[in-house]
Image (cartoon, rainbow, N blue to C red; front, top):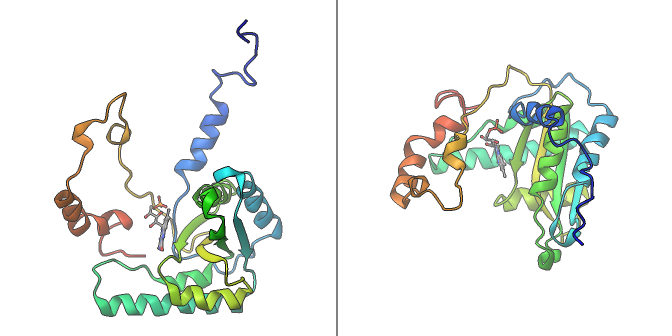
Length: 232
Ligand SMILES: Cc1cc2nc3c(=O)[nH]c(=O)nc-3n(C[C@H](O)[C@H](O)[C@H](O)COP(=O)(O)O)c2cc1C
């Protein structure tokens, strides 16, 4: 007989938790400059990492390591690697509106996310855990900054010994969080209709390579920041 007597564990018509979650999801806003006078309570670091701990991972391997950086000298040194990268990109005229990475040093909350790619057979993807941590930070009332270290090989190599991270691991991201230095703003998001497809892919959602190139040239810099002039 079908096991039809299983009661749902919660009232499926109750939206209270969804609404509370969406309040956090909508208000997870990136800021790239923080109020450096704020002292991040250790308990908040722990609450944020507790959220990361519960994230899903391939084969449940949980190949992640989070290094909370509370020492300002360490934050300054890491910031310097990103500044060098920023200067290098500016020289290359990559047409990518590089943010001001000096803001990293101002972050009261600073977590370096490292992965262990030796778990390659278990799909070592850390985005879910990182996102859980970002949402927890947003739920605590902080703004966040997701900084990826991928590609910045020099920064990687420099950061690992600085933080005592074994060579076998890879620094993936830096998560900054705290009260913002100036009011944060909501960035452009695609509409629900634009991302939803029902049963079949909606052909009107398909972009050609030429359209993507056009988007990168004309639109990318406008949606990353409030506007093209206000790179933060
Ligand atoms: C995987 C990932 C990598 C990112 N890397 C960077 C980065 O290296 N530097 C940066 O300034 N912002 C980075 N961001 C932040 C995005 O630019 C930001 O999330 C996006 O513009 C949308 O803004 P919002 O977070 O306020 O919704 C990254 C975000 C994600 C999810």
